[in-house]
Length: 412
Ligand code: PLP
Image (cartoon, rainbow, N blue to C red; front, side, top):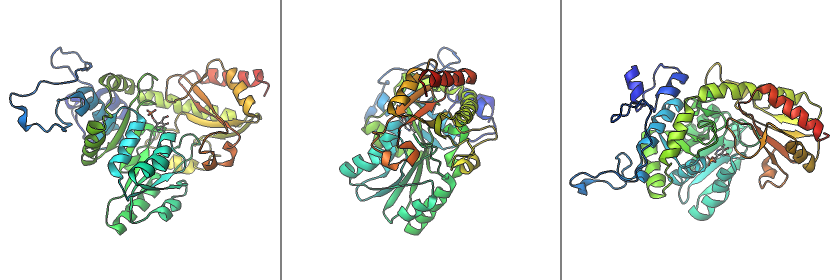
């Protein structure tokens, strides 16, 4: 790929340029009207029609027609993410949950069966456990996908989709993507129809793990998190083939209306420029903090795939996308205290903010108490309440000092 083609920002070619170069240049380009070397935000709802519009397909998502059908800022972002994930195409939507819902509602219908991981983002759980079975007549099975044989046992002739998340929110459970892909695609051959493996790659990002290289059919990201990185815009994306992306656009973008706003697409495209730099810092800082926490007597357990003590460590190492990749910025841990002790600890933190979300520049921590509706699916150590800690980009020493100080102040 020549540099001028990179600058056009609309090539889906795989190419020898490095991840950082591509994060900067793809999706960027020169504005034809002004010569600006940053793409403008195109906020128009509608675009001028040709003299005779009668041949237009009003559900088209390739034309500049109406912003819900697709718009330039969305397409620049999609071009970059498709390249970083190694897919033919990508569809950016309004949120990570919209990307999950789009995948499930596009590829599953009445009488179909789906298998999904017992640890996923809560909305994936509710969609597959409750909403799709009740409203769309889809059968689903929850399995512990950290053992791929459990997936093999759950597959049926009607299975159309297997959905996994790795590392999973909030327990950091790891699933072997290549092993599950092998099982799913062997079954597809046996049953004589396609079974898709979708992977929620939000915690890893394509910097750390590229699910499609490992055999998955669909990689999903909440763009809200690391890809944007600045905690100020919601978005989601599905990276897959052009044929599947177009089906998703037709179903979920044009006709359900889950389109991303131009402003959010622009912000996320800008934030994603520094993704590799940020991921290296998240990876390094989270590993140091996980090791520190593991050394503290007040800490009951630490779940982080970068630790040798994590049951998924070997798989997590094996599926890293590049030599300097790591295990992401999220870890969960429990203190040797009760419900109130965890809250007291959080209230004494001064640098780390008590708030949901992850992948922001600032560190965020959330106490997930004993009342989570999926508690029964979590390993034993999570049953007494735990903290999900999204390590931010602050100096690692300041975060460690904040934790030690809060433990002392909270009397733990
Ligand atoms: N997937 C994972 C793994 C998440 O952690 C989240 C949100 O926390 C989502 C999907 C949903 O993303 P959004 O909040 O952008 O809808």
